[in-house]
Amino acid sequence: MSSLAIEPCPAELSPSLLAAVANEAASGLTANPKTLSPWLFYDEAGSALFEEITRLPEYYLTRTERAIFTAHADEILEVASAGRCMTMAELGAGTATKTGILLRAAVRRQSQVMYQPIDVSDSCLIEARAAIEAKIPGVTVVPQLANYMTQRIAISRPRQARILALYIGSSIGNFSPKQAREILQNLRGQLEPGDALVLGTDLAPGTHKDEATLVAAYDDAAGITAAFNRNILTRLNRELGADFDTSRFAHRAVWNAGESRIEMHLESLMAQRVYVPANAGFPALDLAFAEGETIHTENSYKFTAASVEALLRDAGFAIAKQFEDARGLFAVTLARAV
Ligand code: AVJ
Image 1 (cartoon, helix red, strand yellow):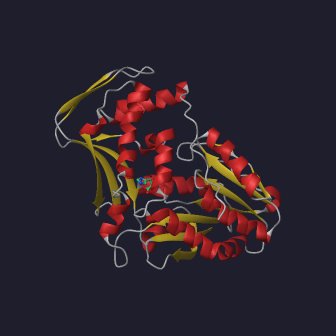
Image 2: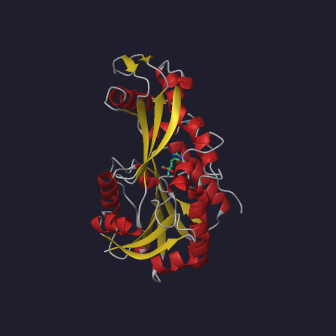
Image 3: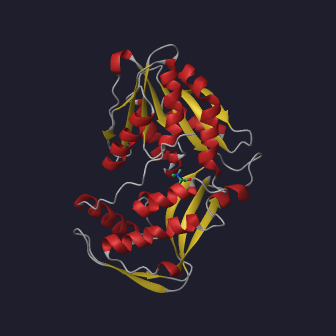
């Protein structure tokens, strides 16, 4: 398969990004329990580590979703378009290999397809446009710079086309159920009845999947996920001048059954202090860590067929079709705006 993988985007520490990072540190590290937002993972080094994660033997998510798309792309496009011309819009980028499978299926049905990736990173969007237009003739990329979590998105609809929205890669898993509902409601606001959504969700452990399989995906033997998690501290050292000793924090991946989520934490291996200088108007932080205290860095929510359906229903969608891999690890849901 020809690769559409997009190179990690170059680091661009604009004043607004510096302020956003300083804000996360000031609010998250003074909270109890301490937290940091998962978007902080994705600096240049972290984006490269995430690409590595997607190829790990334990991290079944990416390859399983890709296999579902490969097996069902034509059917997804057939059901979604219902005989009409369509345009595709995607929340979040960095998943261009998987999007490519659906885009190729779309250009088999109609010679020209408009693809609208929506992302917060300008450089990612520019690279995505170049890669896709070069590799998939017939696709016109119309990027949109927006944060789909905090801003209203605007999807354009050329000549009465149906919209097929993509929210794949288990990206929705980073958000609480309430935030997830808001994101899908925001998206639904741009759609008309009959438009479609492809939602990729990782599944909770149950009859088909054991907890160990799930936890291993977030705690791989090669230690890549541990490096990805610790990189958040390296980033704060570089961008804010903090003095974290990353060797004094251990990677932890924990299944929280009550909340149906994997949690990633960085556990302080000893009592220690960490200093973060003042940045962008945020005050300096003199932080105390107890031995065993953690920084909660990520939630990755896991679903059941029923919980996906309930989430979609609350946002104004009805399920058209649900696809799972043979091992019952991952679900791709095709829903229709009602
Ligand atoms: C990019 C949010 C889908 O939750 O599986 C991978 C991020 N974190 N390994 C996920 C992640 C640790 C990933 N998502």
